[in-house]
Length: 463
Ligand code: SAM
Ligand code: SF4
Image (tube, rainbow, N blue to C red; front, side, top):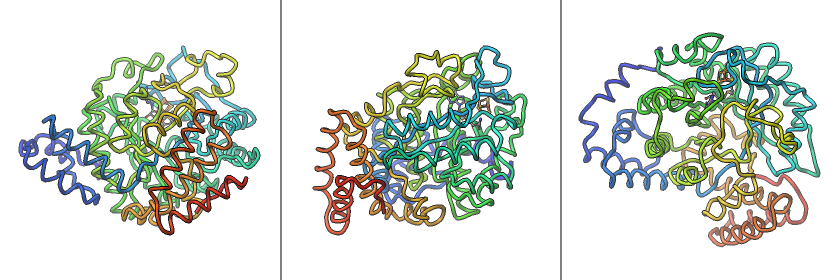
């Protein structure tokens, strides 16, 4: 395809010069500027194998992440609305030919119940996820679901940002999706390697590689200016996939002046009756996965890197260190599973893939706070019109922190007051006090004022 130049990527992967430690060290020095890297430079960093230099890579990625995103970790939960699907992706339990999966599409009332459950655990951001189904996951249905979720308000607690991960749409349907008031539109290419893509997607609309590849172009042309790209790691050589993902990011930035708002890095997990998930053709080990995150962070410093509960808690902790900035928590990947997890539904018969992290939101919040990260439930940017190039400008210059720090702290305080367990509240309040001490000047004043408002009972306080 036009902008995914496979032969150029392959030539970089074969270039012996990119294995030289001196060159890799030089690139790491340049990476400190947090201005991003060329594809050639990213390729050299992906080749690092020297243990000392690998440590330097991880250290540098941490430094750049802190420069742009500080110690904040944004939290969200997925909400699966249907597991019906007309595609046959060989790695996914939802695939059409999987007769062992119990199929279920939630009604709009059931979607509201799921969202209410999430609101009552303290979530403020939802990622709406659906199988591809023209009838069951129609635009009308998605629109109704979104409006119902946004209408929930439980004592000032509500879902304030709804991101969407669905099959690629036409230009007109993207315009419609935008009119529903979504935050980010996400769609993962899965693999940028054309031959592998064709093998993995034997039938259904998803078998059209180009239709998916150009989804973000159509979304941006339709005015959705926060888009999230991603690749499903494990389908082909991870170095190829990472470089192609970076090429996609650079292409969007070049054409529209708006790079990807987020990059997701799902890694293949076992899934019911899904041959490619049970035996990943190019399984990625933990160390290489960490390298992928670090290289993406240094190559596209401004982007949000999303990690899901596919990964185990111990590895998730290591990945926060090297650049992850958004995480899901307390997740379920079967439609209806939040409500019914309390009623002991056997969700494995309905879920998309198995999770590596089964902890509740409260446990995750406690854990990340203890590790020194600030949980953020902030949803301010798109409601303050800081989307697309306006967000990019702030993120690329590192100025986003002046807004994010007060917003993160105020939303964390809100969570602690309304939803946290006794232990998490104690740890969290202590953490906020310490963080406040690190601030000075206008940011400190502003943050203190916002926290006071939250403590006085005001909700949804943001800049
Ligand atoms: N059906 C839509 C699509 O495929 O674009 C959107 C939702 S799909 C449920 C969301 C993502 O789940 C896919 O893009 C894929 O990357 C990921 N996924 C599918 N099977 C997986 C597995 N076995 N392990 C990890 N992630 C998986
Ligand atoms: Fe359907 Fe998406 Fe699963 Fe493919 S990844 S089978 S399109 S739900």
